[in-house]
Length: 203
Length: 203
Image (cartoon, rainbow over all chains, first blue to last red; front, side):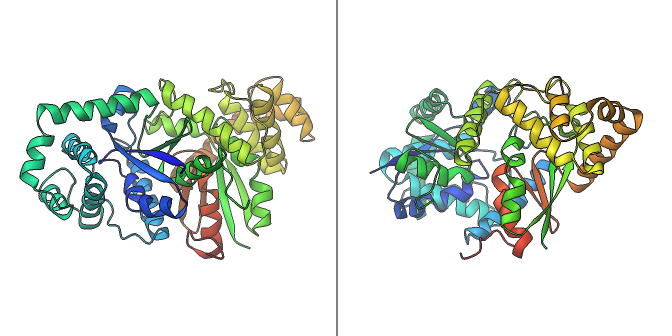
């Protein structure tokens, strides 16, 4: 089955639009998704890439754009969501652990829902524990493990892999050696996974 | 007839994809296009918005992304094109004059073609005079007028209007009080112009 890597970082705003729909959307097109959380903030700081801080006009546009696109996808949304996240690293350390243990996608969806629909920042309480419980996990056990030296190292490894792949922002889709940046490129990535071109089937 | 304002700046890379197809694409959808050249560099510097300078990974992606999307639109392209342009202001002073005189769209298409297909920078010779001649104009007369105090002032007025509208990058489409940034938002803007939502007809 064709497949794509879904590189994301809990903390990226546009990733809300992807996280909430990618599983169903790709399944409907017969494309497998590999969820790959990493620390996008670390890479963007390295690359002097500051998307919204100190840019009020562009930031206001971003929230309106997300609001319009959420409506297109029939997703509830409350904008602006709290941004930037205080605990971006922890949110993603938990996600990396969750991917290794099989509950990472469920946790990611739960934490984004609380962040973008209820206004509770991901990576902080009460969002973090509530999302873990909703994903069937014991928050105490998970947070201790994710925030250990090993947990920190695992996120660093994931981020190194993203950097090595050429990822510079989130969300990013990688398939067949091609990189597609942005939620609005998901259908391009699916088309590429299916037949190595941007053209949709039937066009 | 529904209409959209097409804010662009000769100097924007992604605008190549729009300039070469917007007239035909919007006509086919029954949407009028008002071409509005401005100085995007001035606004981006004001807003501390530096898209590609000093960002080699993101820049490499941008060129590959343009190459892939040009193939989708059946547009020839030679990437990377010379970037940034030395004479961005003059290129757009000429465009503003051309819009007032009725040959601005033709000039814009001609100069982008030479820039992105032949590797000759817009706003400089031989591109500038060749594009003006192809648009039926006398280069000597046009360049003198566009580069006069009045020509400079007219571009400044156009840029002030863009700023006032909330434009922060190019290309941008504005319709019904909504702003859409990026070539990849053209179909969203068309849908909004037609019926005030992002949904395409028939969906």
